[in-house]
Length: 225
Image (cartoon, rainbow, N blue to C red; front, side, top):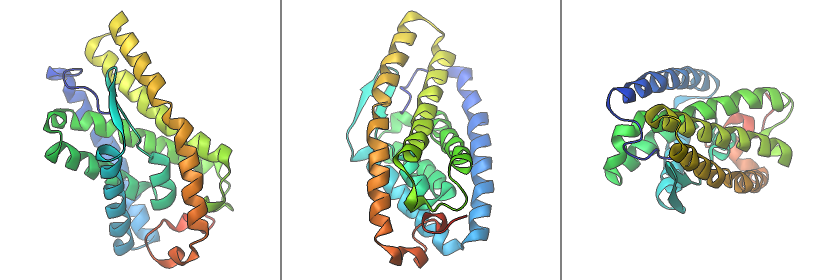
C-alpha cells in the first residue's frame, strides 16, 4: 500500500502531517487505555511482536507494484485481534519506519501518507469491532463472517486512503482513475486471504490457553469485555 513516490509532492504533502498527527494522537490515547488495562511490560512485548510482524509483511511476504501503489499482505485485523489496537498501531508505525529507513529510503518522504493509510483504517476497524462483537464474546470465538467484516473494513479503508492520496496529488483524470481501480481490485484480493488467516491463528490461539496470562496477547483474545 506504499503510495508511489511523486504521486503527492510539494506543498500538498503537508496535509499528510496533519492526518498522521491525528492518527498518532488517537494511537497515544489507545496506548494509555491499554496500559491501564494491562501493564507496560505486556504492551512492550506486544508492540515488539507487532513491529516484527509488520516487517515480515512488508519485506518477506510477496509484494508487488500495482497502479498507484504496492500490494502487501498487511494482516491488520490479525494484529488487532491478537495483540490489540495500540500495539498494532505501534507495530505499523515502527515497521513502516524501519522498512523505509533501511530498505526503501525512497519511501521516507511519503512516510506520513503511508502511516495515515495504515492507522486510520485500523481504528475504523476497532470501532466496528465494538459494534459487531458482543461484549460476551472473546476474540478466539469469532465467526468467519465477523472476521470477514473486520478484514473488509481494514483493507477497504487502505484502498480508500490510497485513492484519496492519488486523486489529491494527481487530480481525477482517466489515467489516475485507471491506476486506482487496478490497485483497488488487486488489493481487495487480500480480503480473500485475511479472514482465513485470522480464523486459523485464532483457532491456534484457542488451543494455547497458556498464552492467556503471558502478556503476549491482548486480554480480549480469551476474555469477554
